[in-house]
Length: 213
Image (cartoon, rainbow, N blue to C red; front, side, top):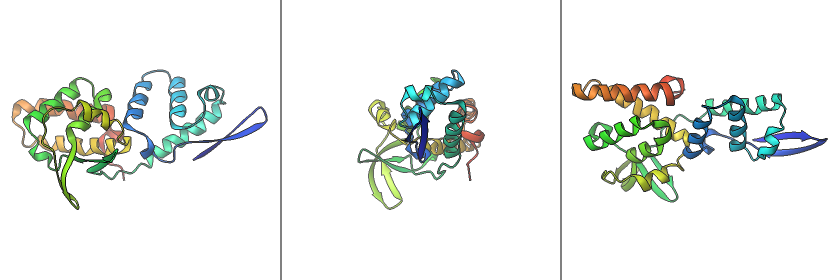
């Protein structure tokens, strides 16, 4: 998307992202952090992150121009693709989402619980590293992934390159999965599930966890 800015009688064209899929998880986390500060700082950092407009020029933009650009960015987010891709590719490596969350192990669930308690906003790459692992075999839509060994540090760094759009879709899917666990979990795990659902619904997911049409 092109943005034309006129300054001192001269007009120059800059590039703005064309879709939410262009935003990485790492960049999204940075923007989530910014949202806790002032609205002017949030607008400044958001425009700088999603365009090639120099920060110095961003600060000199008229408020009406800032409002227009922020409106375009917000519109792109509402039009994001809501289709969950269970297999993604990062730097030539295929990572598959856990193909059957119903068979998730106690160890995996315990690590997810810890990630949630430590602050999901800054630890989303860790959660993605638990849910997504390198694909071992694949035949069309059917695939198997590496067994979980708890070693997620390196993989979490790779997950930062994951599209924020796909992360949000994964979180929606996971939110519905945890909700379904209410029917089967032993009583001592129900509280943990409730905490995860509440955290996802109130602080991370758009529209309170509803899947967008």
